[in-house]
Amino acid sequence: MDRSVLQGRRIGLGVGGGIAAYKAAELVRALQRSGAQVRVAMTPAAAEFVGPLTFQALSGHPVLTNILDRSQEAAFGHIDFARWSELFVVAPATADLLARIVAGMGNDALAATLLAYRGTVLLAPAMNTAMWEHEATQRNLAVLAKDARYRFVGPGSGLLACGEVGSGRLSEPEQIADAAAELLGEGPLAGTRVLVTAGPTREFLDPVRFLSNPSTGKMGLAIARAARARGAQVTVVLGPVGAVDRAGLEIVDVVSAEDMRDAVLPRLEHTDVLVATAAVSDWRPAHRVDQKVKKDEAGADAPLALLRTPDVLALAAERVRGLARRPLVVGFAAETENVVENATAKLLRKGLDLIVANDVTRTDAGFGTDTNTVVIVDRAGGRLELAGTKDEVASGLWDRIQALRGAAAAAIS
Image (tube, rainbow, N blue to C red; front, side, top):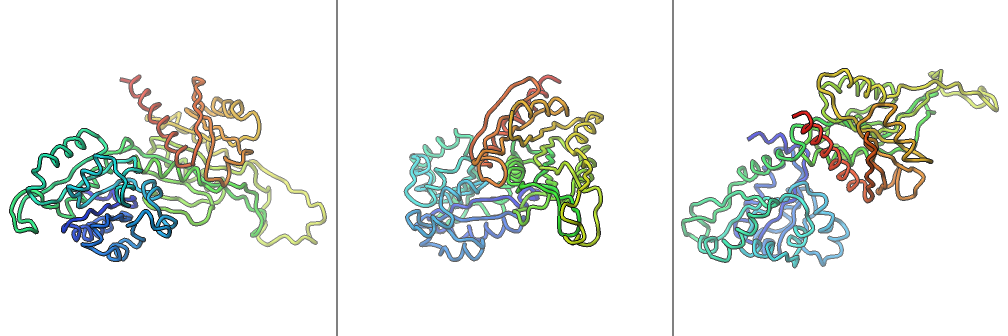
């Protein structure tokens, strides 16, 4: 099994209270060897078998064991854990834990995290053969099997810790890691190549002064992460925004509008979806000097001659029209007035498929915020408003993109 899909992926590991919990430590290492990030939540019973400190040392992160512990919840609580995880693996999934999942209980750190998690859960059952074959366990398994969110790996058969031979043995860590890789490769965007532009550009007057804007790249990076979580191969052409989480993303660092143009255009031939969120500076100084311009040399009211920078989105939209396999092109419009009207004009003028209208005068949206409110406009005049965290808005945008791609594919067939 090719586990390259695990590179940079965020996997939540839930450890249930059984003797097989010791194998979960090996699973952490198996996932990490393939490049995955792993965080661990444990039931109280699991902590009796293997100490949380073991998993903290292996994962490099605090372990969630008690939802009533203020320090744990403040550092990385069960809601944050659920939002962080792209895939949740439960190993071992004991009979007790399976029953509590079916009942929708949230009475410990692991159960509460699973209850708050909305994605796919990979269950690796492990228990005594009699417990595995018990009518109640089989009934719970049947309930979970009907829910597409839950997938299973194992159990295997063989010599169990209790000395019996039969079904109920936890799958080997390598098998569970393979199953995780297979699931993460099944996302709705699996095989899709996504190119995202994000952040500002800088146009230098001299080595210490430049024209730019307040973009932080948060929206673009949220869109990139959402695409990656759905299985896409994602490249981000990123302006200067400082340190960011690069896990699972190919990031191409650029500074100027010309840099961004030169990074984007050659990649379009191998792109299925372009999402251009970058706030590209529209002008650059006509002359850049090698040394800092002194105030006393420039004069009190030094004139600044400006030239237009390349319109990266317009150039990209023009380039893809000549391609045999045209990617879908999504633009962003940061506006301060007549937001939807101005965005729609930009959509039609540049020949885009979708545009995201963003009112940057709002205090809860636009540059630097963790939330956003946008209106997605399509070429037929359809509108969809999204609001929430930037991660939530990114997810809603991908729902819209996938629907548009699906409609286009159906029209062709």
